[in-house]
Image 1 (tube, rainbow, N blue to C red):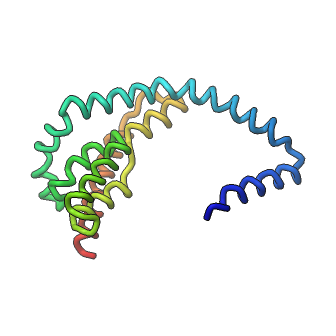
Image 2 (image 1 turned 180 degrees about the horizontal axis):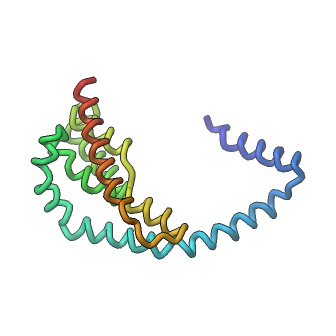
Image 3 (image 1 turned 180 degrees about the vertical axis):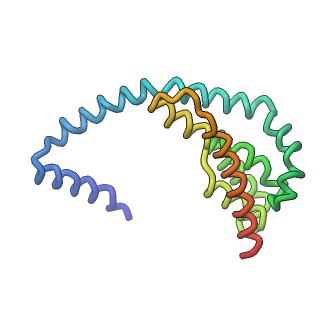
Length: 167
C-alpha cells in the first residue's frame, strides 16, 4: 500500500508530459488560485472555529445534552450518544473525540458504540460546510439550508440507530 501515492505522482507526471503541460507551472498556478480561496474563506472558518470553542468551553453542550436526552431517547437514540448528536453539526474532531470516549466506555461492538459510529459516519459538520461553501459563492442568506440539514441529520441518526438495533 506504500506505493500508491508514488505511482499516482508518476502517472500524473506522465499524463502531463503526454499532454505537453509544464507540471511546475501548473502547480504554481494552482497555488496562486488557492491563495485567493483562502483569502475568501478564512474569515468564515475563523468565526466557526471560535464559535465551536465557545460552544464547548461554555458548558452549553452539557446543558443541551441534559435537555435533549429524553426526546432523543424517545426516538431510539441512546442518551450516551446525545452529546455526539449535539456536537457533530459543529465539530468533526470534537465529535470523533466523543466517539473515542464512547468506544472506551462501552466498546465498539455495543449498541451505544455502533449508534455513535453510524451517527458520525452518516452526518456532516453542517455549520462548517455551510461556512465554507456559502462563503465561496457569496451567499449571505442561508434561508432553510441549516434547519433542513439539521432535521435531515436528526432523522438520519434515528434511522441509523433503528438499523443498528434491527441488524
